[in-house]
Image (tube, rainbow, N blue to C red):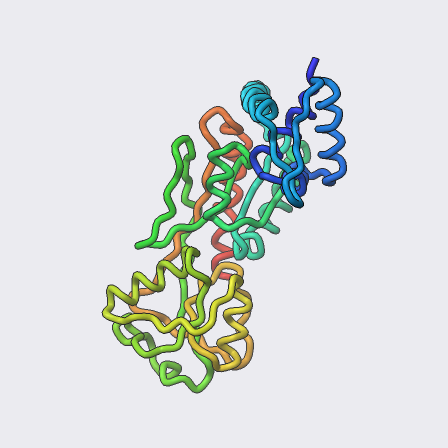
Amino acid sequence: MLDLQRLRALHAVSVHGTVVAAAAALGYTPSAVSQQIAKLERETRTVLLERRGRGVRLTEQAEQLAATAQELLAIVERAETELEERRGMPAGRLTVAAFASAARGLMPAVLADLAARHPALDTRLTEIDPHLSVDLVARGAVDLAVAHDWDISPLPAPPGVEQAVIGDDLCDLLVPAGHPFTGRASVRREDLGGQRWICQPPGRVCHDWLVRTLREAGCEPDIVHQAEENPTLIALVAAGLGVALVPRLGRGPLPDGVVEVPLDPLPVRFDCTRCGARGRRAGSTIAETVRTLRSHWPAAASRV
């Protein structure tokens, strides 16, 4: 009989693409994942992984076995969900992916709260960008993703993925001390032409929102510096190198040399959870996690 944990390891490699990424998702070491698959190869008398450069690829037989493993894991998860719903208490493992500022500003309190109230629930967090995390939910690699949408740049939900809004994240224009905008009560989007912008790289939701918004206001943004994380953007603003639009969630206190100026109208980012397909961890565990996210949102969103 095939071992379910070994099938789970093979399925994780199929979903995540590498042994290292699969190990991180499962909470194992890469060596442990490799050992599980080696044992599965001996059980099946089949070569499952082949070397390709520095990485590995699944053989045709492994791809078929991984598809079967996905079906078996779905059956097991449905059974767990039914038992969980009958007990009415969250239990088992719940995997959560969250974007950087939510992982920093919201998730620590949420995870601590869940652990204190539901000791049988093993919640595991991974920091992942929404463009990737939502797809991982759709593929069954994680149970829940904390993602974000912007008003004119929504993030599409794949088929079978449900959405639950947890709160609105206000955004502010950050400028260097002494900038002409610092003395104003607010700045309209039409006034932003000619600014030197500090922003996330192309392909990120925040970058797309900025470009679309300024173009609709008749301005072509001059993006002079790009960085992945908000603390880096803020540090560049503090150095007087440009202005940036930064959401409040997880931002923390502003350093000396950076001034917050409201935009009119104020940009809003909609932070939400993307839950797995119905029947996959869709019982009391997901519902309780969403309730906990919402209960901690007001404090997290106002902590600047």
